[in-house]
Length: 81
Image 1 (cartoon, helix red, strand yellow):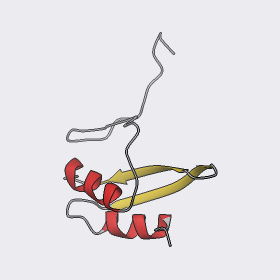
Image 2 (image 1 turned 90 degrees about the vertical axis):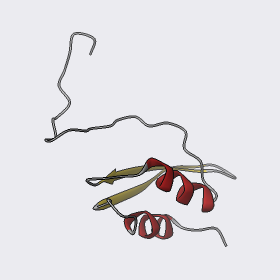
Image 3 (image 1 turned 30 degrees about the vertical axis):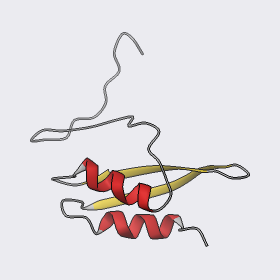
């Protein structure tokens, strides 16, 4: 039996430096499930996250947003939008 998004969320949330995890199933194909994973925390270690995802049979296709610094800023509209 394949791991569920519940299993993935639990394992990712146990990582040091991670304070919250949200896993949303975005698309289901015949053999592939695509999920959007949002992780928040003060010291997220990318390699540890990647290792857990790969150990559960997944892969990372893209990282679409990263926020870093002493405070969190919201995305603002620009001329390119």
